[in-house]
Each structure stands twice: as structure tokens, then as C-alpha cells.
Image (cartoon, rainbow, N blue to C red; front, side, top):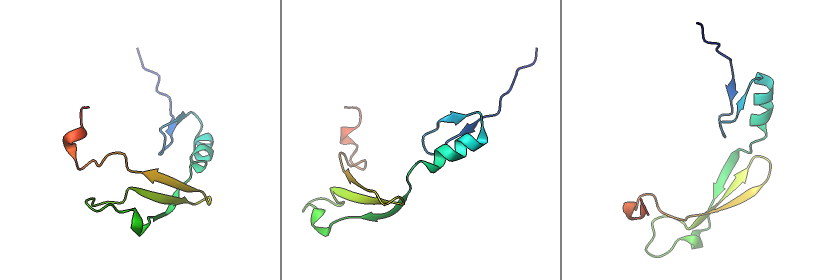
Amino acid sequence: MTEKVEKSWECEYCRARFKNKQEAIVHEKQHGQPSSFVHDESDYQCQKKYPESIIVKMNDGAEILYRQEKNLEDSSWIGR
């Protein structure tokens, strides 16, 4: 018995799968891409190494605010 192998394309950003290459390309172009990162110097806390938040400017003009929830360098929260 032979196994049927189907070609598919995968979005590099969200891993959605497509049977058609052109559909995959159109889909990928819908994802915004970061163009720069901005942080406010006043956003640093006294005992913290990194800013609490950053603004990511996207290639479509959007500005997205990201806030630090957990510092991944501090392994004490893992498994909770």
C-alpha cells in the first residue's frame, strides 16, 4: 500500500496550513510586522533591570503596548 502525500504550505507566523501556495502568501502578508520598538525611560523601576512595558510600532502604522507580566530570567514562577 502506498501512502498519499499532500503538499501544504504553512504560515511562518501562526502556523496555519494551506493547500494553495498563493493563499498562504496572501495570509502571511496580513500579519503585521514590527518596524521599531520604543520604551519610555521613566518606565524602569528602581530594582528592575528591564522596562515594565514597551511599544512596538508595526509596519502598518499601529502601535501596540506590551507589558511585562513575568521576567523569564526569574525561574521561581515556573510551574505555578
